[in-house]
Amino acid sequence: MARRSSRLQIVGWLTALLLVTTSCGYHTSAHGVRLPADMHTIYVPAFVNATHTYRIEVLLTSDVVKELRSRTNYRIVTADDGSADATLSGTVIAATEAPLTYNSQTGGISSSEVFVTMKVSLVSRKGKVLWDNPNLLYREQYQIANNGTTFFEEESPALERLGTDFAQTLVSDMLEAY
Image 1 (tube, rainbow, N blue to C red):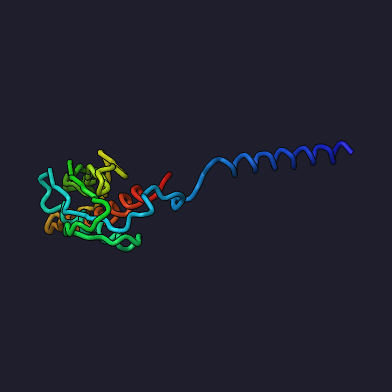
Image 2: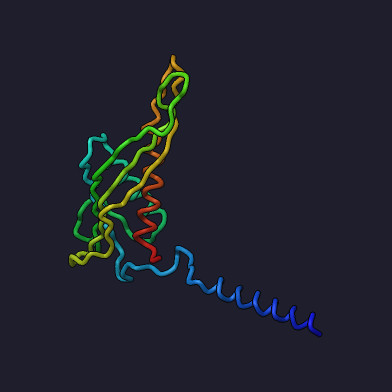
């Protein structure tokens, strides 16, 4: 009888533990959209580049437009025709590169990381800020192929990967309530 009682206690504790851990408030990222239901068109002008990284604003603007078109039902316009319900503006405020590892034989850099920081906001036609992130940071690591006789520049492909991943992050942050 005592053995059965201890089994019931164990089952009771496990059930209580299961209830507590499954009701922690976790939800999937698609839970709760914050943007107004009457918004149908977003104007995305070319982002501003306040860095010395050549054409990074073109890459990031293009990737964000592609991501918005693929993941949302909003009509995305890149020319201000006056029909947009909101405007997504962005400024690239920093783009830096930092070495991560070095080749012990050549002393050269073997991998680097590029960091991009942006100020981004989505503002309604009436001037209401719908979403804002003044310090959106994203980074991408890349390898540098350098065997002493040949050198392959990997920064451009890394920026392209960064642009795609950055756009996914930005659109997720903008669309989904956490």
